[in-house]
Length: 260
Length: 258
Image 1 (cartoon, chains in turn cyan, orange):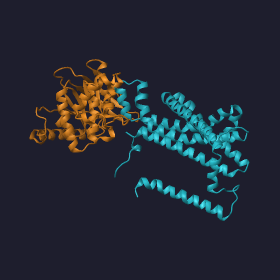
Image 2: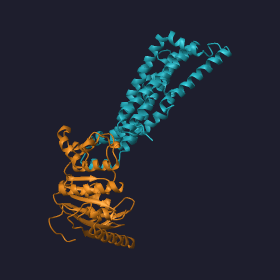
Image 3: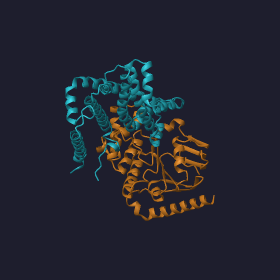
């Protein structure tokens, strides 16, 4: 069996085994659905509740994508600014770290007090997502080949040329790695904020549906919503991975398949 | 150092370089680079030959002494530099890499294309314009690096042990090609190497340097009209190599005594 087939078949077998085991345990112990629904019930709930779950999914995805977009713009922009000015870097970097290490769950309720709900949710997604973009882009901008930098100097390149022609292309692999991490984190930020907002009685995202279903003991719907969230996370990761591969496929080691 | 012929393109007088960690790389270096010559700086590693090259290029400032350009400070604009590694931008093609110096000077891609293709044909890479650096062998990457240095038609080409990492066959081939490029383009080359054999084959003049601190210990003129594959196995070549090797040993002895 070749590598490609194995990479699909092996995890699929694990999934099938897990689902069968899950179903078996539920049946054999006759566990009621309000404690643990069977996989079949989760799927039929997913289909039956599709209209409500779909609109919730769209709401969460919108927040996630907006948060990610702002994180990319903010992270790369800030990294470029840091790279141009030591003073700005030293002044602001510690606060970027503080923003990153403070658990967003703890910050979300505060943000919900001071900001309109949608803005607060977006802010949470942004806070958790921008740091990997900033940190990775900074690393990339600072790890330019010294000889290439000398070459640019020799040919009298301007600061703008050094940034656009040398530093940004050189930093692209790290930048994309940061964005790929940020994609997953943005979803987490959005979910955390929705849960915090949901307990305040408003919201329509998937995380809110999960919280709401929990209060109503609608466990099958909780599972269905959770399943959708997982798929959304996988889709975001796959899309960003593909984007990374597409951008680097011609030149970067990470995108090459080697024959041995 | 008797000055014969035209005024040197660039003169170093009493040049010293002390690095931040206290290492004295160069001390009292006097060096003239004359128009049209192929000058090799030969010495063991740590003799400051690369530092001297970087000072000529303006990539490093001397701690003492002066660097004087015959045609004024603007002459630095006419420098081509080849590093020890090919130092190519992996994210762009061979064409894009060779275009870089012209692009930085504000040239238009389409307008520069004929010149780039001509330079690529000089180094034998016409068919590889659209290839990415990773797709090339070490020798070919070095050719791209040389093409990039040549594309601006530099007055003086500075090369810092460019072939040190290549295998012998590739190195010989590139040495042959470099000699013919030097002849065709009538440019001035300053070539840093630690190989006496390589310097004899390539140079019209060899400056042997002593290590720690680096300064000139000896100077040899290689005056031969025939630099080709036969030259490499001739008695003449062997004779020059012996003299060079003795000079190199003397320089290392002087360095150790100092």
